[in-house]
Length: 281
View 1: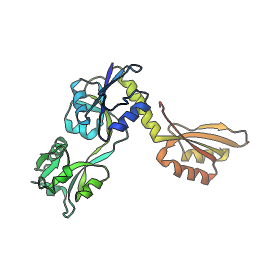
View 2 (view 1 turned 90 degrees about the vertical axis):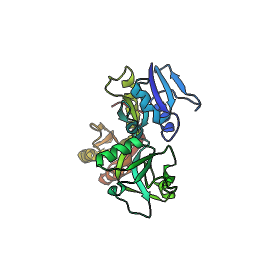
View 3 (view 1 turned 90 degrees about the horizontal axis):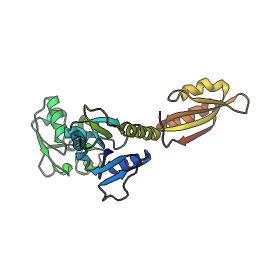
View 4 (view 1 turned 60 degrees about the horizontal axis):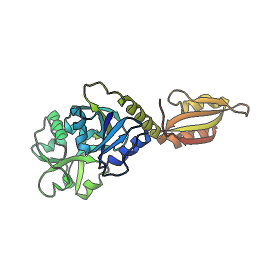
């Protein structure tokens, strides 16, 4: 039976459960449950702290797990990224008091508070910068005001928490993170994991794309297909109305309205958008 780790709390937990449900896997209904068996898919799910998941997978206790890229890198575990899951996006940045103008070179000799010492120490080492790393498990934003650190390095989603603490980001991104599926490094994927990956890929793609259907005169097919080339090629079917065809194609969800405007402008009509719930490509 395949053993998979799922975040039990935090920003990744709910979305991880949702993507697994959409992929056809049973998930817990009570957040107090630590283990759930899905006999139909021969999978056993373990609900663990996101920070620990890469360690369990890297040690070989579990075959795979969902965690954040930042947590995987910081852990130093013997685990590797298998695929991106397209949620939980954030960036890892330096931040300092909003009253000061910091550049990367200015953190030489400073105290840097972070909950991710592994990421920060490696980054400083690669940049040739010597600084003191102060490890904190939470409330990193308060460390500057309380005099524990001069600057911080932390995950930034919207930046609202930093602004409330009187901080602002500086320098380039240290790391771009999102939810990922991880497996043990340098080991062949276990039996059944390829099915999980294929299902998750189907959900991720289905969330990113929609089906676009529209009618167009045969004389405009070339122009229309140039606007919506699709993943491989559009499906084109003749209509009962002479000289007209129906065109179906997958397009990126984020581009939908722009594409509809362009198609309408060249003469396409009956333009419809349909959600995709799952796919295999």
